[in-house]
Image (cartoon, rainbow, N blue to C red; front, top):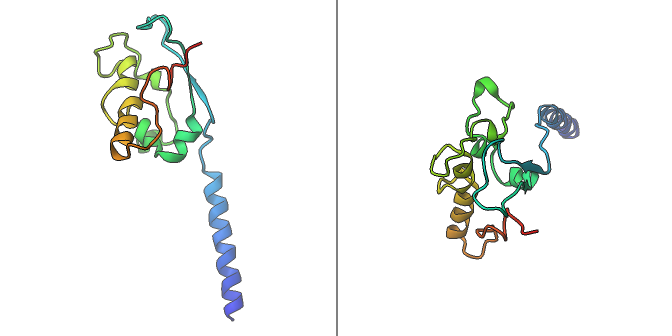
Length: 135
């Protein structure tokens, strides 16, 4: 009897895991973040950024960065530049501040938070050691 219960429990677990896999999001391993058209760079060495999306997706909940997700648009993630496209570097909702704000849902803000919690952690804080690799 115990053997049948174990087999049944294993079968149910397999079915649940399979169903969960069907609903999993297609998470890109890497994305390229490009400046919105007409939005000039603040320095001539700043270009597009290759972002290791898969690495970050494993460590963070989707809504941490995709903070406009709701029950109405679940799984329909927008590119950051859909909302964060303003050219003014002082605009908290603009393109520059989306990445460089002190808020923890920005790249720099999150990296600072991780470093404060663990000074031996490795997230880059320097422009050219992190996102903006010098050519």
